Amino acid sequence: MIVRTWRGWTRESDAAAYEDYLLRTGFPGYTETPGNRGAYFTRRASGDMTEFFLISMWESWEAIRAFAGDDLGAAVFYPEDDAFLVDRERTVEHYEVFASA
Image 1 (cartoon, rainbow, N blue to C red):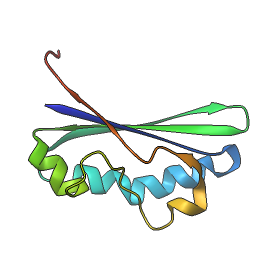
Image 2 (cartoon, helix red, strand yellow):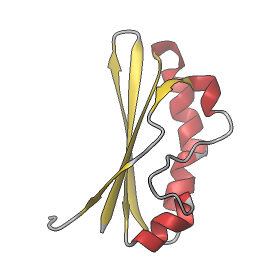
Image 3 (cartoon, rainbow, N blue to C red):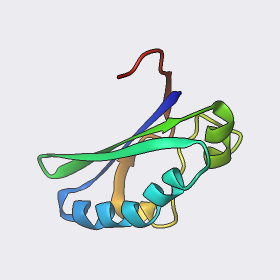
């Protein structure tokens, strides 16, 4: 299994709306892709900003490619992300799982 992570930041005042937006776009985009083994969409407030940390699990590199395209290191964005995000990682991190419980 492979874990894929990404971070983005909104203004605190936009956090609830962005959470709703992610649940309508990114969450189904991840979880409805064959080979997805689960996803955690998390957030934490920090002053006037909210950090969103997305964690997804994938059965193979091919499954990630089906979701993200050929550039596996590039983050996937949705049409209205620009309206919410004040900062974002343009790349993602991947980790190969070697043990879990």
